[in-house]
Amino acid sequence: MPEQPKFTVTYLEPTEVDAEPLPEDFSGRGMRRSLAIIVAIAAIGVLLVLLLPGLSSLRESFDGAEPAWIAFAIVLELLSCASYVLVFRAVFCNRMSWRTSTEIGLSETAANSLLSVGGAGGLALGAWILRRGGLTREQIARQTVTFFLLTSLANVGFLALGGIALACGLLNGPSDPLLGVIPAVVGLGAIALALTARRVARALRERSERPKIQAGLAAVANGVDEAVGLLRSPAVAIGSAGYMLFDIAVLGVCFPAFGNPVPPLDVLLLAYIIGQLGGLVPLPGGIGGLDLGLIGALVLYGVGATPAAVAVIAYRGVLLAVPALVGLPALASLQRRLRREDHDIDACAPGQAVEVLGRGLVRSPVRRAPC
Image (cartoon, rainbow, N blue to C red; front, side, top):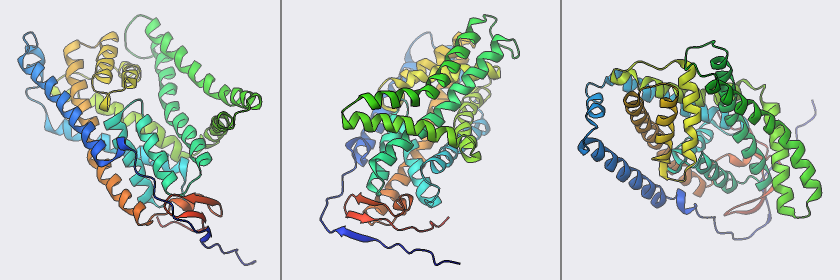
């Protein structure tokens, strides 16, 4: 058997490079500020529910909550977070240890929970962590596109399936066929758009003369290719579907937790995906936008306003608390390890000469990460 080549870390150009600081939004102070804003908004909402006349039915609905159902919702949200970690590791680098993958993935879920903006907060934090760990900008950009497409595919795929099932009468729900046809068309159109994006990106890249635009278009084209290739991966399929389905299950469980019947599966699925558009409003934790979006979508599909509001408020409490409680400690641990260079992120760039922030230009070794 031929001897395997050995790689060692080689400082090609020793230089002092200050470690890039954690972006303000993701610093301890930034996270605490976002958390304080969320708590303040939630407190105002609670006061309004308690004091405003005409909301007595909503107040009464919160009486007699079943702790067992709430505990079950928390478990389901933890499974959603675990699914996020699974697809993150499969997309970005399965040579990373499970500890590093878990800490990055949970940190991203905390950022998504506290910063929202359609999940962009978590992706931005993950990009900083990976860059700080030694990965190249090109690799991060390509895999971020891949990750976004794969996690979004579950949403648009189930949107299309749920719409088709509702329009064809295969599942119970509103009688208006447009409430099924429109989501089905939107879901199928989004999938078609994603698949054609690589061809369009490559065509535009050839016409552009600006390096940054060329790099961005290359990341899109290569990211789509990589996403299509990873669709065969069981970890990607389970992770991307589980991340969404467990979260939907949390919303569904919050109905019986307060004595209300669970809506039909297709209604819950479509209302959840459509209501998530409210999370695009740039507010900490999506407070207000996501809540109103979910309640409005549930009411549109025939769920009573009071049961919908109660379930969404409980769901949002779980969605904000659980990722933050597991993600913020993970981020703190990861920051300490990054400062000590006690991580294996650069195992994802074997043999490449990369600029590691805080260390200078180094050649990463080929090594096997511990599980």
